[in-house]
Amino acid sequence: GAVVSQHPSRVICKSGTSVKIECRSLDFQATTMFWYRQFPKQSLMLMATSNEGSKATYEQGVEKDKFLINHASLTLSTLTVTSAHPEDSSFYICSALRPTGGEETQYFGPGTRLLVL
Amino acid sequence: AQSVTQLGSHVSVSEGALVLLRCNYSSSVPPYLFWYVQYPNQGLQLLLKYTTGATLVKGINGFEAEFKKSETSFHLTKPSAHMSDAAEYFCAVTHSGTYKYIFGTGTRLKVLA
Image (cartoon, rainbow over all chains, first blue to last red; front, top):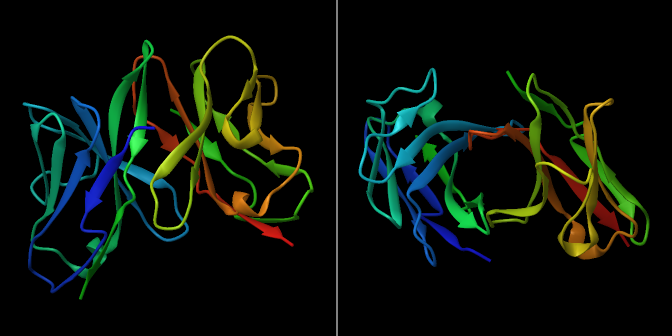
């Protein structure tokens, strides 16, 4: 099946610093990727839709200046958490949209666990 | 608006027993429904999906789910649990024209020897 990777898998940072998370589609090109966050024992919540070559579309309540998304190529989207604070600690998951026999299916990365101290 | 409810955050079954994971949805438009499985430290893997057509959907690893519009349900079943089925399972809903998924809170399946 299609493979999506994320890097890093786990990161610990100090409050006030910025953290970049990469999402790569390894064996297909993805014009659209998605970023989710998941708090313990809660659902995956969609943060934004990342479109190659254009600005990301953010969900209501997600600060676009805090969560910077760049989708510079068909295989890479990055999420930068700027000036991170402890409340940003969460599990961040990306997915990439791949055409599959006339339908498009989301393939998910393994997630990145962020801990802000 | 759409929403998903997964009853039971933790489910335990004996090896060889029936697996039943419950998912109920709310949607004002015809839904597309998905079940994903997540193993530790891995991404979400698609088990099966319903978009249109046959309401009984068969997926990978012996799982299947039935779309019941009257009950707004999409429960996941497997006749005989295997130890390797132990994982977290997520139900999700979307609809035609969008790829935005609404996820349930997940159900952790434990398989007892």
